[in-house]
Amino acid sequence: MRVYITDLEAYNNGHLVGQWYQLPMNEDLLAESIENVLQEGRDICEDTHFHEEYFITDFECDYMNIEEYDNLSKLNEIAEAMENIDEDGVKAVNFLMENHFVKDIFEAIESYEDSVRIYENQSMEDIAYDYVNDCYNLDELAPIIANNIDYEKIGRDLEIEGSYYKIGSDIYEYIG
Image: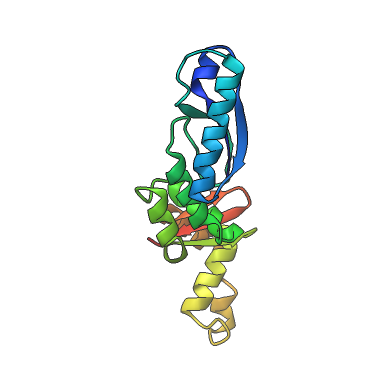
């Protein structure tokens, strides 16, 4: 997660004074970084205005949207929690957030491993085949039955059930 922190007073006076910061970072360093941006605003504006407010004018983040007045300490905490999550985990957290299966990102981080399964580059037909194979040993079924299973229709029924979501080339299963 990267955020661009801007001095609000300098911005209101026609100056874009800010800096990109990579989160997570040490809380003391974060406070010092904010103060550096505000001090730069004081220096550029050369006035008696108070430079004590900042806002986020831009961000780069794969797993959530950031608003201009989001709390930086909370964002730092989120970035720290997401730091050790692999790419599939980030996709799962994002899926939970975008589909409103959780109330906040902390719940998504806590529950993604138990509530989302991602099938990369698979079709619902592939998932239906795996589902049937898990329920019944296809090698033990009579060939006339095993060869006539309609995996496309089973896949469609599984999708209609409402726990499978196609996003890009992946299919997400919400286990809940």
